[in-house]
Amino acid sequence: MEVRRKRWSFLQLFVAAALASRSAPAAGEEWSKGSATFYGGSDASGTMGGACGYGNLYWTAYGTSTAALSSALFNDGAACGQCYKVKCDHESEQPQWCLTPVDKSVTVTATNLCPPNHALSGDGGGWCNPPRAHFDMAQPSWLQIGVYKAGIIPILYQRVACEKEGGVRFTMGGFESFELVLISNVGGSGSVKAAWVKGSRTERMPMSRNWGANWQSLAALAGHALTFGVTSTGGQTLVFQNVVPAWWRFGQAFTSSLQFSY
Image (cartoon, rainbow, N blue to C red; front, side, top):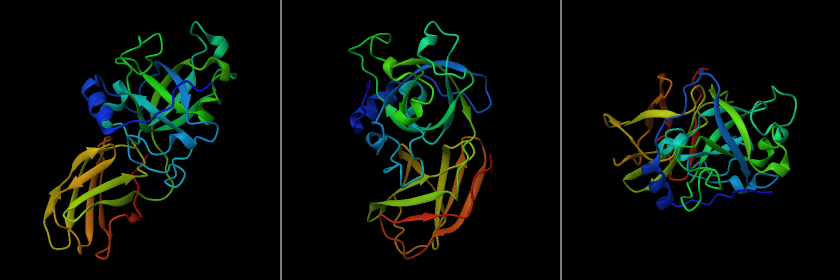
């Protein structure tokens, strides 16, 4: 059965951000306990879009190995792009809902928010309520570790490095003097801590997170070739020199030749 199907709004995102109470564990930490449900259908078509802003996950190379995180892990969008190894907890009180082998795991990328439902208790359907660590996984990934009939399973999870093909991608959104740049396909730690932009005729200017993986600038940069500096949450900074040519238009995407190490 499909336990949750996500449709979020900017209001939900704002409320959930205010409720976020802790960050995800850093890559390399020990396994942590949590729970997992699934959504999106057998082809994961219902997972498209989402609170990180990645859009069509097939086209942006995230595929069906994705998850919506509870607000305690989502961290107001700072977790967008992070990768997690997830496995069913065979030592829990409900091991019958775990598929074998015991060490079977899947790696998923955070692409969405699983909003809290305070009308339900955390052990009675409010799976994404703070302070629960919960993954609402794309159904194809969830079915690799859990029994379909269960609907929800106990899991163990840990942050891992993201291995991405190709370079970091910059998608130009916004209008007129407002640039809303989606930074995606980020390897290494997977998520972005800070960013700046420099036009061909401007100085370097800091950007701020608008929502999810979208970073904004209020400069008038039409007609400029754009250079971006991106710092990952792992602390690595890369400079993408003139990655966006001067002839760019809103709606276009440009892929760099650089990628964060992992």
